[in-house]
Length: 283
Image (cartoon, rainbow, N blue to C red):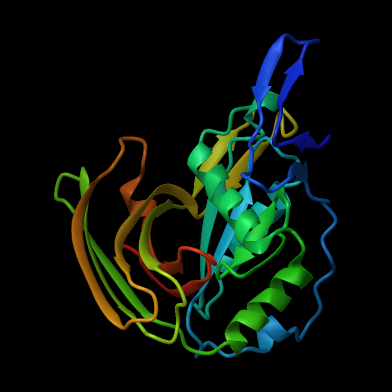
């Protein structure tokens, strides 16, 4: 996969296609596909030996059905979500900057690409790549590299307890809405900057028969796909705050209610560090 300069408009004259590339403000960056060669996992790893008593960990994967390097990372994310410890809460953000290559990812959004840009600025990486996995908004690695992923999870567990976040949901009788309640406590010691309470609607068990692009003729399975993300109340920097919020979300017809989850998390708006996360699954 060739690199794409994010600050320029690439003109593919041979095909007559104009491609608007992503751009950072004051930050040179590139877009690339990561290597598909994951590091071998070993028994007795730090992540596997860690207890389930630590606070939940938010794991975000930036991925695309248009990138041939991504399916192994998608599979790893699914396995992380299946862990019995229940301390890992995964999200999959399908970016849109690979859509030009021949296959438009049905779950992609420019908003998710912009979220990844925010991490690139906060972490000063100077680049975007897929598959990229971000742990608690603090560290990142290639999402298919199991060894590196486990190391980051062990580091996150070692940081100890975080802010409390609880989220519950109730499906409307006709299945058209999801009634949501979020209750969180922002501790004064956990944030140096303004903190936002974020709410995501996530869907599991999605299957796509890819017709074109790098994954042509493959049927891809995707879990933890973010369908909706919004910002709820904010807490001022360095202050203790109890945040409570209730709302009703309209569900799109193509969303399967039985496969939806809710994920709420507190995130520093400057450093992008996540200070607490909780989730709800329908019974």
